[in-house]
Image 1: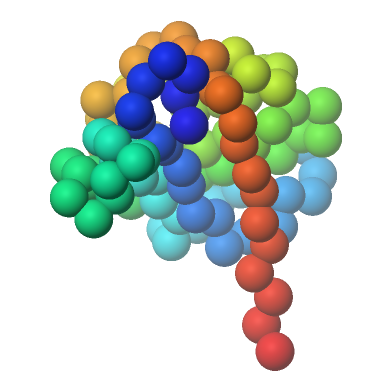
Image 2: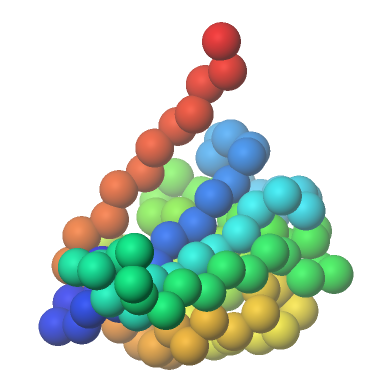
Amino acid sequence: KIKDSTKLIGGYNPLDWNGYCWKNTSDSFLFSFADWKNISNATTKLSYINSGKEWAIYCNNKYGPQFGDLCCPNSNNWTYDGYLEYYPNLDIPKNKTIEDYEVFQVIKN
């Protein structure tokens, strides 16, 4: 959730976060909800990685999650340039303070 905003942003990555490298997948995506308090009626945007899928995610245990150029260099201050070679622009502000974020792992049975 973006601080002092109703916008909720997130992403999905089917790969692990191990290593110090860019990882390639065409299955990862970013999403944004205009109003996190009313998700069922909010404007929702979804964007899959563009042709530059080799930059889908970046792994580095010194940083938070990175999807293309949506980057978490520290716990609360995130950056996003909206370069189209990564993910189509979702109207995410360039610099933002994140109020809270969560990371989940899905494990197949």
